[in-house]
Image (cartoon, rainbow, N blue to C red):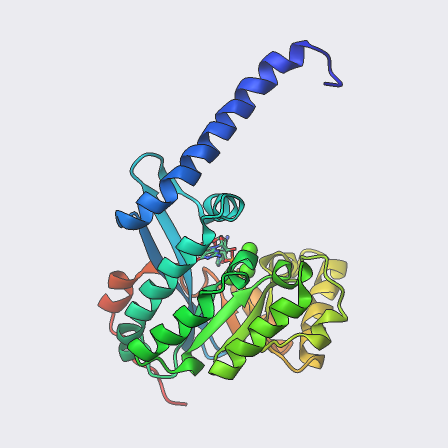
Length: 277
Ligand code: C2E
Ligand code: CA
Ligand code: CA
Ligand code: CA
């Protein structure tokens, strides 16, 4: 508007194209779930000895109509169009179905993490579904972790904390994802039911860039340690990053250095032997 009338003719078609794509995405999610267009990939989490301690489940969508759609794009659209609950319910069923083969291959103390969105906490059915899936698939609750972001409790702290408490009563754990990138007050961290902080990739990227950004990352890790929480660093891509993180007390690592998100048949095709220390 500021730039005058002429801009409109350039701006509006692009916006319409964008809206059209969003609409197609929103309208193809449910049929995509039904037609097996979605897949769960698993990315390893390792300890300081580079032994696999768990996996994060990450969704992949290869849409018949649009080709590969990134979760960064479709998760947000699913949240805005009220489709996220269906995605999460599908994800829960799929991961619990995969659970036995993952633990058989990687050991019975392997922890599988799933991402939940803020909207999932308002879904009255979700706890019931988790409970019934645990029973049906004989899940050890200790082997399931739920990753949430600060946005899940910013809107309704009491509801979120009640949900987290229920999850912990079931015996599973809660990880706060993308830690350090949100807007939440740090005082929340002492009031919320948490087991793990996931240090966001942005802080890992900053390691070694400058003295100041390294110091910020060090401080974030230090704070997590002071809060007595497990710490997992994400987006670890180099040996130097790993060495720094381990030296500063971060004992769980995730990133391309150890493995990219991979489909389950490929993961299970490679023999895995956990070395005893
Ligand atoms: P996230 O939960 O922060 O997941 C980590 C993202 O970082 C993943 O992207 C992963 O592939 C990527 N990543 C991991 N290690 C590295 C690395 O070393 N280098 C680089 N460059 N990237 C790395 P992805 O799979 O594209 O997922 C993006 C986001 O979409 C996730 O961020 C999460 O917020 C959301 N998402 C993915 N799957 C689900 C899901 O099943 N449910 C929900 N609610 N959200 C999901
Ligand atoms: Ca995550
Ligand atoms: Ca993350
Ligand atoms: Ca993220």
